[in-house]
Image 1 (tube, one colour):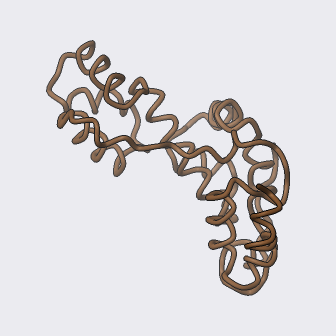
Image 2 (spheres, rainbow, N blue to C red):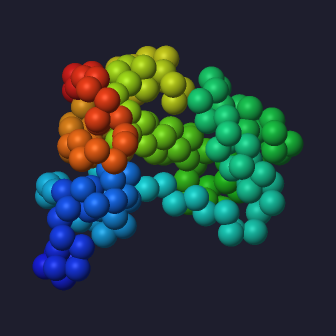
Length: 178
């Protein structure tokens, strides 16, 4: 499969030169084809299942997508639902396949991954931006979910500058502590 993808699309450097960094990242995720070979775990995206038929959970998912960085978010979601906590937890898991807390964590890590791919903001700052006051906890969770540290993720996902716009080209040095 790699040979077919390479033959059809060239490598990520070629895509970045022609279509920009963002397009190269999008294509590499689409085909799980990277300029490195660390498996698929770091690139697995949260699948937002909203076609499950539970209107209460859909409403909470939509609200959560705009408010994921807030403290005590699961308690707020339960309050938004109007359901008892145990009922909410059960329905949320049945509808999404995630516990409410796991879903929030996955959503936050997905946002952090996007920020790492496209910006030069310090890792600790990204952790706080997506809702983690304790940056050590953020780093541990990021590693558990993606299989690599935030710094390693950034180094592997940010493409070199090819003049198409994007944070890797702004000359700033990201905080790469792992």
